[in-house]
Length: 232
Length: 399
Image (cartoon, rainbow over all chains, first blue to last red; front, side):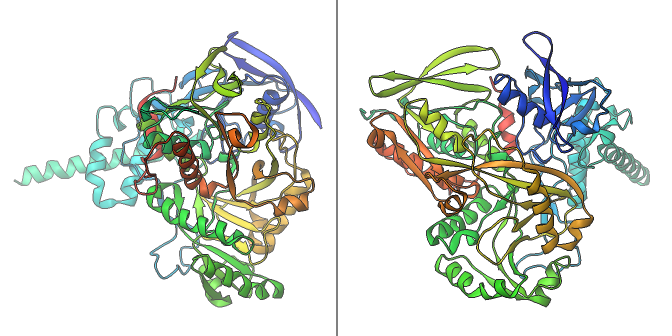
């Protein structure tokens, strides 16, 4: 196995510690952190759960890029580049690379659902007692979009707004109620259309596009309401 | 140990923030105990979150063990009711790709019937109509009520329930040692990784819910706990190819389950044995083995892109020295009272178990706790829907 040096941010010294880690073509940033914790420093703090990009816990900044550490491969960083691992800057830091995502989750409305109709083999037969196959939403709530967003005012942020757009896609009948939420002061109007949220999303949710679509829906509704008033 | 008159005065410390710890903690506070959970890392960071996500109807185990099969089926019914948002409630299909597998049908269906697991035989045409990407050489398959669970969000539902009812949850807090009063454990010393400081927390009972690490933790109290950490590899590719779980109609072996989850296809798993639960690096050979196994079942898998290979440790109850013996160890769980078994009062350990049975593991453990402290409170975790996992974070940051 090859070896390489990685620099990891440590809260206690407000600076990085350097470690040498073995790696092959599959080794991820999270694997490297696991090696460091188990072989070098059991006190190293970072979040992790699923190890395959589904739970959304392990977001970090690697050389300034916001990634899920469990799927970001060390071998994909050119060998002549140093590797610097830091916590996601906008999250509530609790130590080293770990954060508490309470603030992030608080932006999601309570009644956002997490399942959808499956989008593959849509013509396939289903068991008699089922209407359709189902799956979890693509958004894994990792917060990378929120971290990458350049908007600095207090607002709902791309993840929560994308989830509202998904609710409208799933339940067109409830569009009005959800648009009311998106049209709040802390909602769509704060978006500056930077689209960094869509670029950084590890599961292709495209929050930027969804926020734009919400904006169009809100405008269309305003127009419709205005012309209704005129007619009256 | 003296039974406590007032339930709420009894303080139970749960060690291990995985699915088992989550279910125990929730059940404890629901039955009126004071409870604190310590986890050395982030919640679910051990084996729990790394699960491939197969919600077991029990069919995989039922030929070998009817009771484990029956218990899984019952838990599937309950979990779909109390945590529907954490389950892709499609089906599982045990497919017969070979003559040998087709011949296993009768044994399999009989065992399922005895354990109350509903089955439906699908002939080749029916099966391909449901799952068009399956290898068309198949001969048919048995449909069972398996599904896909979210290995992170399902336990977080239990943590949300526990937190709502006042449980204290401490992540990044590592238990360093036990505090003894004679032969009785009276507390734990914990290092808070956030602050780097040690503190002692008094309690009436410690529950070791550390899964594959249970032997290591028990050794800190000079207890020999027979447990076999048995890691296995899983492989995820990008692209969902099927909607139902695809399994092979034969006794459980390597590379025989393909789990669709979100936009991924996950093939599992392998099994080896390790002295150290922390050492579960993926053997190179496993990736090729699993890739080929997936292609055997669903040929389109070869056109999908590698996403991740990872390993997790199963906490098999009992000791075994060979891998063949390991495969024979039951997937059942056991609550061990070290007072009666080892002469160390004030500590229970859980060994064995599976993701699907987290709730019933909690129930049976807290039944033992109630008996120890002479408390009459029946389990309600099967009856009441859990709060959504996002509610966990509604109570503010953990401190």
